[in-house]
Length: 387
Image (cartoon, rainbow, N blue to C red):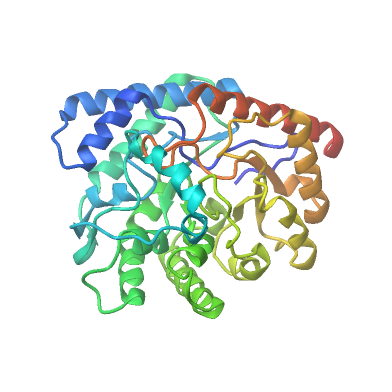
């Protein structure tokens, strides 16, 4: 992965707004309705061209395809893997159900057109990576479209889910235990991890499970049970990355990409030392939202390993406030001080902007304003830290 040697590089967490037409197609497909393949392919290509162009216009250095070919950041695997069917019943995050007035306020949001992450398919048979063609096509199409754009990115990345988030949200109705299910998913996802890197792309593994499941699946269980789950997932990821150079992988952790109280979030302090044991070259962490903006201090007590970079989330992806560039620069400077070396720091977002088709909290136009503010703030921080 490129370091921020002459300027602080900018990136984001993966998903970018999908056009309304594409959202509607994915929503129909997720409900089992027929969608004309040719129309879907055309909509995906047009949307991917758009997000590549818009990222470059905003000054994003390390970009991707905005996850435009996927219905969500993890449920897309059902189209590439065998063994899924039926419907999961995922627990609702504890902070949402704890405050009844907040739940009533948010229920209206779920009437909009979107792909649901709460009622995904479940594992009903052995999970295997059975169809590589969508993966191969996604990588090839992205590389082709970036080349056609001309002035490409400094570096390109592609996301893939953690076996832990798939196991927790696409629940188990087949394996004898959760660990066996996570292990099977790790073996299947290894195909995806290796192919993305073989295509010359940076692999980003999305692991909200390593934080969010504390207030979801493990909400009413001891902290130790959750940390055992974290250790399980980390072990499975490390085995899946056995043949992948760690410097070609970054890992994204967040507490759930939704605007909510988040009062039951596990502190970064409790999981950060464990995250250092993952075979990756960079961590991408939420550091902009009001519940976790103070946690840059954790790096004083738990220094970032010498062989790791840090992608600091300095843009909140759950609010339509556009961060002032000075705020972005201040956040980057705070993180740089505790990391100790600004060349090991990249500027990013807390999470994606459309993690499931239609689920984004931020208006399309404002997403691009936020990414432009990210670039402007990174430029200010560059003048102060790397001049």
